[in-house]
Image 1 (cartoon, rainbow, N blue to C red):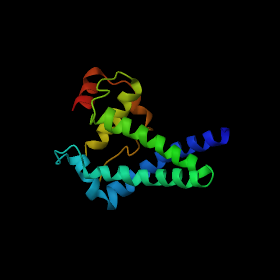
Image 2: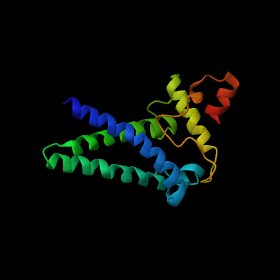
Image 3: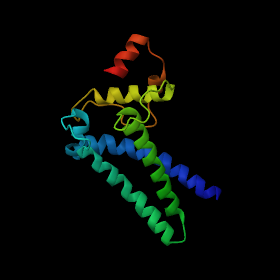
Image 4: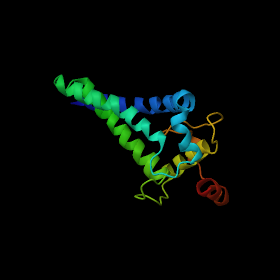
Length: 159
């Protein structure tokens, strides 16, 4: 039981690195065509081409859960669960809290939420595939969590 929980936690944490790597080198690289509308907001639809990445990341989770269950709930099952939990966390932070695609948590004074929003805002200030920074989602540089002056903070969060 403890080993299974550790596998889930390890898979969850590894996904932050995978998300960073994929975002920096694949989404802002060869698959920019699908990620571009997430930056330039030229698409007025609820859905974006960028949403294809949800399916891409869901595939290893589904396969791990399925093959792990078929093999007596071995380690693959728990890796798939870790990936699934990361996907849920990513969705909640990125699509719900930051981009407000769903208006479930529209106002938060939480220091972590403010820091994540600041880092993501800096990432989105570039509408092209180069010069961006802060490719991670749940782990960002510490300086984004430090309080800014109220004027500077309003510019970062509301612009």
